[in-house]
Length: 151
Image (tube, rainbow, N blue to C red; front, side, top):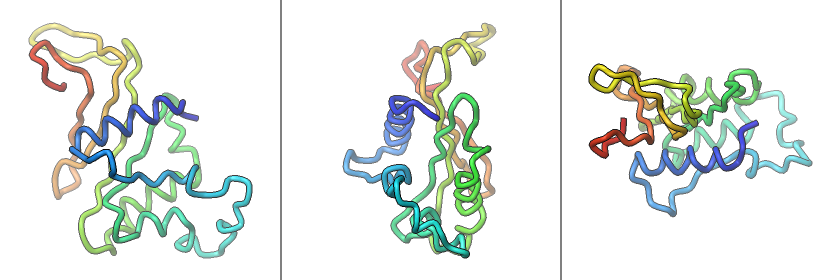
């Protein structure tokens, strides 16, 4: 799994990038569902699960996938369902729905080009965002360059 401190780092960075207030809610299924009684998941219609109901709720503005170092969300069945609902099924929903991927870049694992020089990125949060209506993506990292701007 993802260390809780990394989850908080990613969500804090996500909130900062979007200019959200401290009162902005995030629905986290681990805390929203009783992990000792998963009876509500015992349904023949996956669209009736709490995950789908939360994503399809009119108050849900988007989905943030918290990616860990081993890319576990791609190997978890419920995460795969959430990704499908967040990228395909939400087209039935009125209004926009963002799908973004947050991660923590590990120290020295990524390099960026600054001028002519390759620079190793320090440990920092990163966010892959939907950038346009055509589904293109842009990325941001919580790494400040020499000019004080985010890379």
